[in-house]
Length: 204
Image (tube, rainbow, N blue to C red; front, side):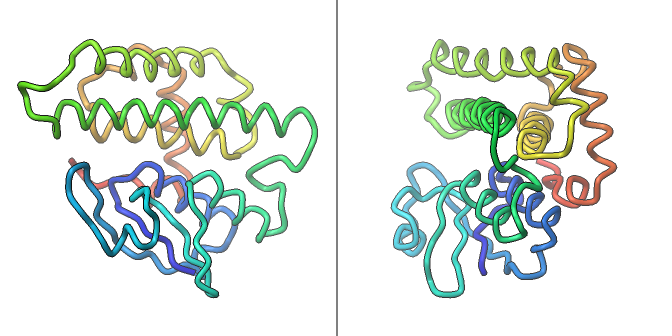
């Protein structure tokens, strides 16, 4: 299998962590890819018209899109239930938690594009601030979720690791550690896991 990725992508990081945790990382070839707003990449567009990272290309050529769907595929390939509960109320709670975290990452990425990619005269500050508040409010919610912070290692914890790591990577001065000490403690503990530590993005 091949996984398109960038070391800077929190979505690709999520899949890399999952691949290590499920024991499948040695069966996956990491294939660097570059995508950016306003910059064409016809070769990658032939793989996925959305031009989003990552995608998993199976040995038969089939393409699996979306970081969550890839993690679900890997979890099933590894026997199921390791990172995503197989059934019952816990399954839906974990999936819903992950959806919130995915949306937080989406908003943070849009903030990054608004400030760093969009021409200065065309920037919309209110739109940027609204998206940042969504991510910040999401952190506040997980600050008060001991079931997530101290629960079993699953897709929700992986998603939270990627949110906090991306905050460090692209918004180093945002102050999330001071505002959310429980998230800080969680993050420090997670960095003890090899899958989390090895996937930390490089210095911005």
